[in-house]
Image (cartoon, rainbow, N blue to C red; front, side, top):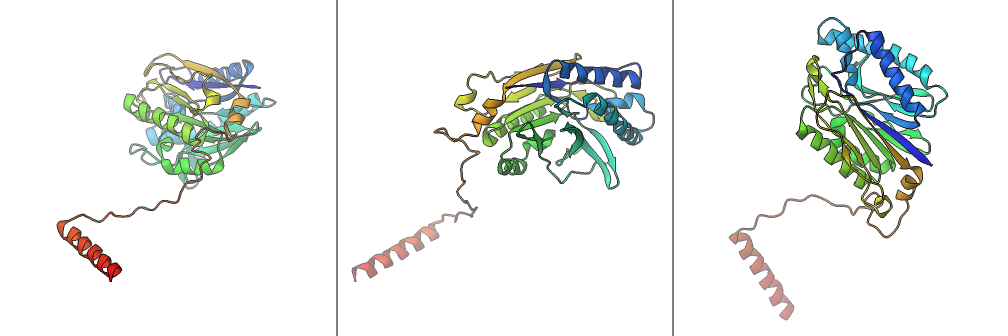
Length: 307
């Protein structure tokens, strides 16, 4: 069975005439991808902040209004998705809850909305609370995680995903330059190997008047472990670093391939390896006095052995 994965590098340069036009465009876009066979659809981090174009007030007020509107948007999109067995990760955006404002990915899976908060925040995400829970979504027999941007760079999160035996990692991201995007994609590639998982990245691109996403550069990534079973599948990073055009790439992946990855064989597979317990110790500083003491000690042990 083939699974079509659709990754959207959304351009914040797109500016509809009105909020209703923006929503109509998005819903039509998602519906078209589903009609063309997409089973997983991934949008980038913070793409919902493009809605600052349609709400007045300072940035804090705009985020509150976007959060309220997003709940209405999700309800309407859910009507479009009913009856379709798809997983939609609607990038991320501001999500106001009782205990604070979060940077949240909204995930439609198995007929309802779930969510994943960003856990490791960047210095410029002021006023946003870090998430504390890593959610595992189950879709068509696979374990799926949404790991937002900077979170993909965290070894501690990778360790948790390894324990879960994760199959697919979706990484919505937003980076201002090539360096940031390189970190995301390099880490995504490494995670694919150490987790034995498919990892897909979708970055935000383009210029915006919003202060948090004023300039965005990125390239998509589609990564599979370097295992024999995946050698016939072309692995590349797609799309230019910055563009004013809407970018959509789709990938056709055999679900049997994902299942085969989890079968033990003669290849080294770090996601199966029972790791040897290791401790960190301070190595003694070698000094001339230390060496003299060692020599004297060894000499004494030798004399005892001879006597």
